[in-house]
Amino acid sequence: MIPLPNQAQVSALNGMVVDDFDGDGNLDVMINGNDFGTEVGVGRYDALNGLMLKGDGKGHFNPQSILQSGIYIPGDGKALVKLQNSKGGYMLAASQNRGALKVFEMKGKMNNIKLQPNDESAIITFNNGEKQKQEFYYGSSFLSQSGRFLTVNKEAKAVEITNSKGQTRSISIAH
Image (cartoon, rainbow, N blue to C red; front, top):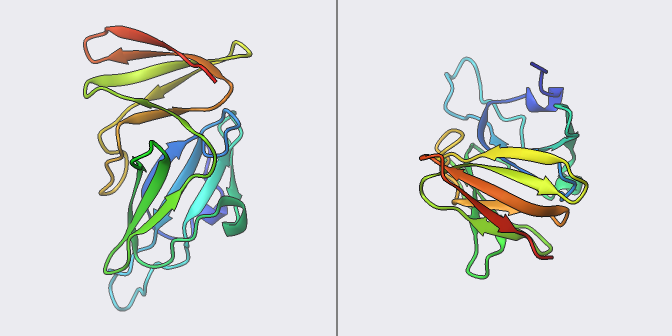
């Protein structure tokens, strides 16, 4: 186990999405947090305005500034989910208790693969021969149930998806 950076320990962490947000082949973590519902004597946990932790592929995460990540979620943050817009683009939706829903759209073309209801995991094979396993959930953090799709970057060449019955299907990635 590796402790998260200090910037991820300054407030309550509620909604989280793990994905490759910068297209470098390493999984990153996007976080929505804070908690304004604490006891009066304790005060609000409000030191977080959204946070992206950039993964290095070796289990370490580097916090990104608001300018680096493009994420700014002040307030009593709760859920964070990934969604697709009508054109298949990647979006993050961040809810806030008694506050506005904030929606962020990823810039650039994303290669999204629709998942079936019983899909459990995928092995992504990259052009350099490396492989990465990703598992799929119906909710991975507080009040958060993301859309069922897998995003792969431009270095991915194939994906093998396994369902709950152990059946697999292979997808070649055309760029």
